[in-house]
Image (tube, rainbow, N blue to C red):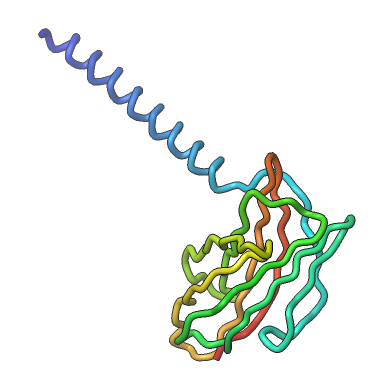
Length: 153
């Protein structure tokens, strides 16, 4: 193979690799974005002493943590829906004031129609930590979400 032909081939391979990388980044970005849907608003509440309720447009998401709040023990999560039919329910945990990595858990629907899961939270070395739990209810073509704040010690 001649030198100009090698350079041309290498150039095409480079362009193809760049195109694949760009397509991969675009697909990753698309897959991380939830489908368009409603955002329900929640009132202030005191997890885990009482469940939190988010509502809007005839839809309700009740979110409860049925265990003590601690970064050192598993949390028992419960989500009850009203006015929503779900294909899946997940809860995404984000540090409200600090990035704590990717923390998403898929809840399982019980025979009673209530979604539950048990999951640990990442340990925060600073002690007290404010968390945002985003409940994501996925329907056929949309996703409804509600955010709830709580603090662990």
